Image (cartoon, rainbow, N blue to C red; front, side, top):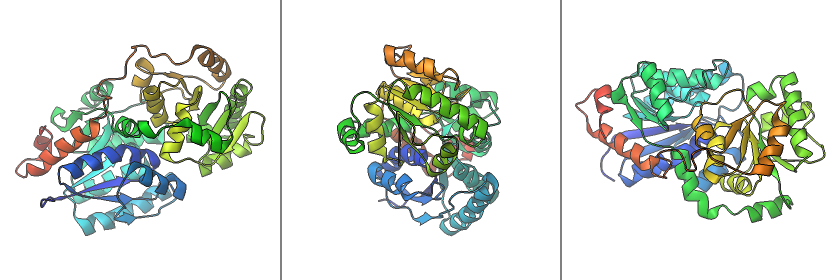
Amino acid sequence: MRDHPLVLHVLGARPNFVKAAPVVKGLAALGVRQGIIHTGQHYDALMSDVFFADLGLPEPIANLGVGSGTHARQTAALLTGLEDLVLEHRPALVVVYGDVNSTLAAILVCAKLGVPTAHVEAGLRSFDRGMPEEVNRIVTDALSDLLFATSPDALSHLANEGVAPAKVHLVGNPMIDSLFAALPSLDPAPVQERLGITGRYAVATLHRPANVDDPQAARELVDAVLGVAEQVPVIVPLHPRGRQRLAEAGLVDRDGLRIVDPLGYVDFLSLVRGAALVVTDSGGVQEETTMLGVPCLTVRPNTERPITVTHGTNRLVTPAALPAAASKALADGAATPSGELPPLWDGAAGPRIARVIDAWLRGDNLSPAAKGQAR
């Protein structure tokens, strides 16, 4: 490996791992020196260790183990822990992913220390400031030196917010890179057998605070999912926090529902690939179901990934409308408005990002904005 400045990747939650894997592999192919900081924002070992193994990610150089907590407490722990690590390792560039609190904290630390940053999945907007992730996205994009957009609408959002075009690169979706790489391993049969699943089934993934933290909203969501379970068995892999909240709302020991522990990357996508329907409030699952051609009903009033609706199998529904929407989806199957995948969902986003970063690192005489012009 040639003598390169250090690139640090800050990862905190499962979607970060999936997005980072193609970028890490792309940079490794170019001989870039790099390391991963795992913040431990997802505090269940099954929610991180299995993903690292499934995705072929190298061991982190540090794990902060911040765990759960309020947004303020978690972000405060991330800020102090990340500051120490950035000062210790002196990276030339810190790469952050998505919209979790680890991403926000890393951007703030680097901005204060004058360390350049890159944001993978820049420009996504739900236009709902009530979502903590939306605040994280806006702040992260405002402070990043390199912004990697996954879709054309993200480019428009960044332009409207005054981000210099030289900083922005439309690269495609690295989460889809990981899915492309995993496709040969996605066999529904073994996980179905292990979970005792026979016949048609749906998968539900529910964890957004707006859906599970408010007792009334959680009860409405549970009633809606039970309406789906009357039509087809529903498999529900639950995060630890979601399990507690939804259990309080009655989403346990109900006919037609099967609550299971969180699954590894390959097992989860294998389960989704074999499903007749997916119900979710997750951003990443909206993209994965579009790629796999599985009908997806997103129980949210908005999405920062509208391309999954205009080009994909995703539909937005209210809890009250979920049972009827599920009935229609189960009858009609998956349909994409365009009949093809979104632009640049071709499995090559990671190498594109890696080439831009490599060129940026070699442009030592350029300012951060000018370095963003490197292709």
